[in-house]
Length: 132
Image (cartoon, rainbow, N blue to C red; front, side, top):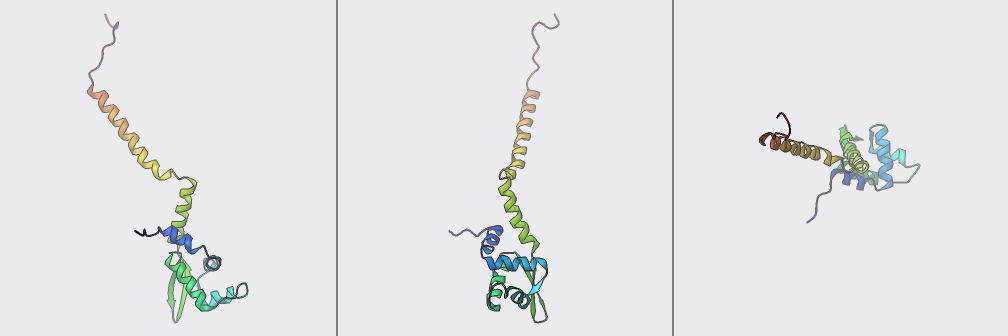
């Protein structure tokens, strides 16, 4: 059975290609069309417009980019939700037990509640040697 990758995993896979990382940095600076991106990348790395379009498609499918139409141009921008998924995944690496904190707090509350209930249901014990 093929498990569908988590959003952060798809994004991290997409970022595995160096050109995609460059494109993401350029789009993070400002929204741009494919033509503008090709023009900016060409001096550093010769690449065709269809290749850039394909890489942008991978980044978009991974949830890292948004696209909107402006006339005949497609304008690409950064998708904050996709970045939030990646950031959350990275945060889990810093504190891998954080997702367990709330359930453990709830368990501790239930244990304390059970102890109080047992104490309340037990008759009071009279200490020997007191009062007489």
